[in-house]
Image 1 (tube, helix red, strand yellow):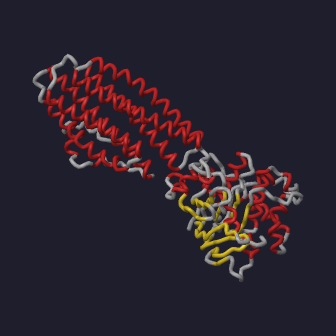
Image 2 (cartoon, rainbow over the protein chains, first blue to last red):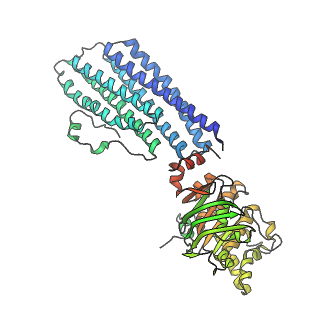
Image 3 (cartoon, each protein chain N blue to C red):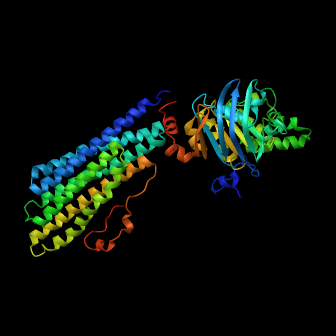
Length: 240
Length: 279
C-alpha cells in the first residue's frame, strides 16, 4: 500500500531541516561569541547580537508550522513524538542563541577592563566543550542516534565543574576593582556557557524520547552528588 | 468493583444538574475473549487466528485498513456468520468463560447478550419509536404493556435520546434524524439487556455533531457494558477507546492501551498505519 500522508510527512522533513539549520546557526553564534571574547573582537561580538534576529525569525516560523501541524494533521505515534521533540529543540536552540548574545554583551561591556589568563583559558575550554556538545546533540537528532544522546551528560560534567570553579578565580581578583569587574562579567559568561551545555543535554533528552517513546531526564538536577559545591559559586541553577 | 455511573460523573459540577437522560444501570460488562479465531468464506480465510480479550467495562477499538478483517472479527463475536452461506468459523469466542460456538449454545440468546449496532441506522421505518425500542423484547415473549413502556423509556434514557423523543414516541422511527435513528438503534440493542455491545462504525454515516453525541454516549455506556467498536476514524478510536486492536490482512498485529498505540506503538506496521505511511 502507498504512503497516504505524503504532504504532511514532507512538511515534517522540511521542518526537521529547518530545526537543524537553526541548530547550525545557534552553534555558530556560540562559537563566534567565545572567539570574539577571547580575541576582544568587538565587530565579531556585534555580529553575534545581530545574528540572533535571524535565529528568532526562524524559531517563530518553525513554532508556527509545528502548531499548524498539531492543529491540522492530528499527528500520532512517531509523527507526534517528532513534532513534540522539534517544538522543544527549537526552543532550546532559541535560548542558546540568547545565551550567545549574552556572552557577546559581556564581551563588549568588559572590553576596556584588564583580563585574567586563567579565567580566559577556562572560558575557552568551556566554549569548546559546549560547542562539541551542541554538535553532538544535533547529530544525534539528525542520525536518530541514542548512543550519542547518552554521551551528553558526561560531556556536561567538566562544564559544570569549570563553571563552579569560576567563582574562586574571580574572588582572587578582588584586590583590583577593574579586574574584579571584569571577573564578575566573566562569571556571567561562564554561567551562560554552562546553560548552553544544559540546553544541549536537554536536546539529547528530547531525541531519546523521540527514539524510545519514553521521556526521562538524564540527570536529576535536584539531587545530584556533590551538592555542597552549589554553595561554592554554582549559583544554584543546574539543569531543570 | 465499584463503578461510578455516568449520572454521578456528570453531576460532579454543581452548576450542571444531572440531565434527565442520565444513564442509570447496574454494570453489566462481561469479559469476551477470542481464542485462535479464524473465519473463512469458502476456501478464503480472512481472519487468521486472532486471540484477544476485551477488558470489562471498557471500550476496545478495532482499527485497520479496508479488508483487514475488522467487521469479520466483530461479527464473529456474536455468531453473525452463522447466517452466511459458505462461512466457516473455527477457534473459540469465550463469553464469561463459555464458548458461544459450542453446539449447546443458542445463537439467538448469544445475540441478546452480545448486542450489535451497525454502520447505518436500521430502525424499522414505519414502526413507532417506542415499538422500535421494544422490538427485541417482543420476540423474547409476552410482557405487559406497562413493562414494555417502562423498558422503552429506560432504554431511550440510556441511549441519551429520551428527552428528544419523549413527545414523539408514536411517530415512525424513520422520521427521526440520522443521529437520532442511530441512538434509537442503540436503545433497541440495550432494551434486551446485553452485556457486550459490538459497534460496527456506528458514526461513520453521521454529521460531526451527531458523531460527537454518539461518542459521548459510548463513554457513558462503557461504565455499564463492555464495548467493542470498529472504526475507520483513528482519531475517534483515540478519543473514545481504552484499548486498541490493530488488524492487518486478517492478522492481529498489535493490541494494547490506546494511549500507547497512538504515541509509541511497538510494531512498525502499527506505526506505519496510524501515521498514514500506508493505508
